[in-house]
Amino acid sequence: MKDATVAGPSDQGVGEAPDRVQATEDSSVDLAPVHETTRRRRIRRNVLRISIVAVVVIMVAIAGVGIVRQLQPEVPVTTSPGHSGVVGTGQSLSCVDSYGLDSLVHRDWAADGTITKLRISGDDANATVRVEHWYRGGTGTRINIQIASPWVDEDRPPAYGVGTRLLLSGGTDQAGYHAWSCGFTRYYDPTTAGRWAEAFGR
Image (cartoon, rainbow, N blue to C red):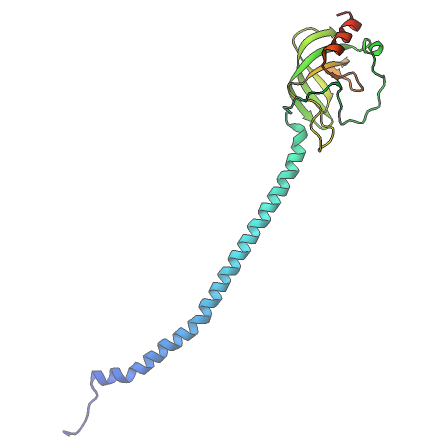
């Protein structure tokens, strides 16, 4: 009876240690692929997010260019080009009458005026004009007129804009004043203005 040996707490702990070490080592080996897979998934998700953002940015940029091109004819133009002679427009016109002083005097109205407001829609524009001088057909210092759009094409600046001074003439109807093209709307210059005044006796 005195020779019997009873295992103490320290002996049991020593006997269990290898199993715990083995369990810890096994866990480390098992988790490594999981961590690597998670890291790769995160990388793929980040790459996907970046790609989506890039695509969205490109689509917005393309859409923005399209919107700007569509709205460009609708917004006020604020240029005042220094030209002389006939005002060019983007319209393809078939003139019913050729410009000349003899035909000019048969127009319903004619005036020397400066554009103060301009709204463009397609091939046409609505302009507010400060009248500098009336040759025929009106009174007052401001009128609204219908006139051909100043956009000749997308690669060239507008033919006229806010601040441009013009010699205007054309027809009238219930809608108001219409400025004719085909030479009857011209950039202001003193020599031509003098000829208009002489032709109209004004």
